[in-house]
Every structure is written in structure tokens, then in C-alpha cells.
Image (cartoon, rainbow, N blue to C red; front, side):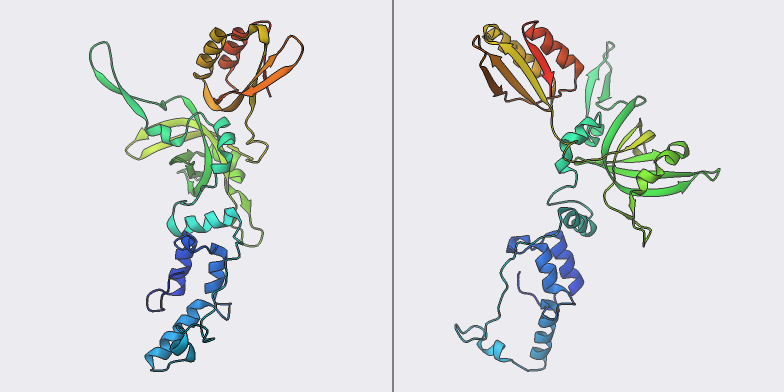
Length: 326
């Protein structure tokens, strides 16, 4: 860590810099650096620097001051080696967000990209995507990728819940939902809020009564664009259990006899697969006349849940082949 003095930064500032990742370049983990400045550590560098500064201000010089630059003098300060022990990823990101208001080094949702893709129709960033088109009369209009007025689903992590009350005294909530591309406001009216209040509360600490842990949800509703910004008027909120099992991509297995494999059929297959981009793998299995099977993973990713894709591939391989989603 770069040398500094108490007059330049107090303990609170240094802790914030550590949590934000400002000293990650040093090779020390954030957990170890926080130990260096912990006030409960009798050898913490904050108090040591303050003492050294106070002594110098009063004209006192220690043997370390006099001989610290002399090699083999025995008065050089000992610097611990990096121990490589870091906080749990969740704690590390939570502290980073608490200091900066954003995630920088990673995102809590990144390990669950596949699971999220199954629970949403669009990413939140898609809301701002639009294109211009010309109608038959020559008028130019803007067409958004995410339509208004029709049910759509978004999925992500709840970052804030503001509890409110209607004029009739019924509880409701305004929720901020975030994915890796952006955030959107969810308006949860009383009827829906009664159904999902426990989900939005997350895990509640029995001692403090405060919510703890990340809250992952899928929200369904109708998008409204107005001067207040983009808002989703929710009709349903469902809790998401994001784990290794739910995040495992599927495999589209295409089984084909060797005598049915041709350049024409392969070109047609590539054309079909390219129209249904997703996160699932594609595996081609070719069986020889002798019964041996050659397996190869194709360099493409598809949405194996798309029924139109499955129908087109099944039609392409014909009765001699077989299409399986595993």
C-alpha cells in the first residue's frame, strides 16, 4: 500500500478506499488490508502512522527514523506478505456497492446469467433500444424493442424496496430491480404486494429485524414510459432460486445416421441454429453403419427451449434422425 500520513486520510477514508478496490493492485486482499487498519489490531498502520507523525511534529526521532534506510541495520519495518485470504464474494461485492453505489469488480448476478435468461423476456437494457421506421404514408416513427401495454418479464436482483400506502391505507411498494445491464422501477400495487411482500423482504435477521442477503426475482407486468421514467406495473412477482442446478445450460442433441450427413443438410442446419441464438449447447451425434457414434460440439449457442427451433431441426433431420434436449 502506498505510504500516507494521518493528515492525508483518516481511518474511515482508508477503509472506504480498501472496500472500493483502490488498493487491489498491491497484491494484498481487501480482507487482509482491513486487518492492517482495524482499530482492534494493536499494530494497525493508522495508529502507527499517527504516532510517528506526532513524534516528528514534537521533534522526536526514533531509531527506526534514523536507520530505516540503512540496509541490515535491523531497524527496517517488517511488511507482512500477502496471505491470499479474501472475504466471501458476496461480502466483498456488498461492501464495494455500499461505498461506490455500483458494482465494479464483478456483479452478484454474473454467475447466474443462464438462469436469468430463462426467467425473462428482455434484459433491462433492452427497454431503451429502438429503431425508426417509415409507415406507408411516409411518416417516420420510433419503434421500441420492448413494447408497452403487453405483459413482459424482467429478472434480476432487488436493490431497494420503498414501502408506501395508498389513499385507502393499503400497503404497496416501489421496488428497484437491477440486472447486469441496468435497472428499472417496479410499481407493486396492494393486491400484488400482499402476495409477494415476504419475497421482497428477503431473509430477515431475527435479532435486528433487518433484511439480509440478496433478493432475486422475476417480475411480470406492463411497461409504461412517461416523464417519471420507465416503470413496470407489476401483475406478478416470483422468487428466483439461483443455484448451480438452475444455472446449468441445456444441450440440444442432434442424432443423425452417417448416410444422412451431407454438406447441404449441414448448411441448412447451421442456418436454422443461427436464427435462435441463446446460451444452450449444441451437440451433433453421427452414427456409422457399424454402430459407432461420433460426437462433436458445434461452435454455436441456441435457445433449446424454443419450440419453433425444435420443430425446424426435427423436420430437417427427418425420420432417420432424432432431436433431444438434455
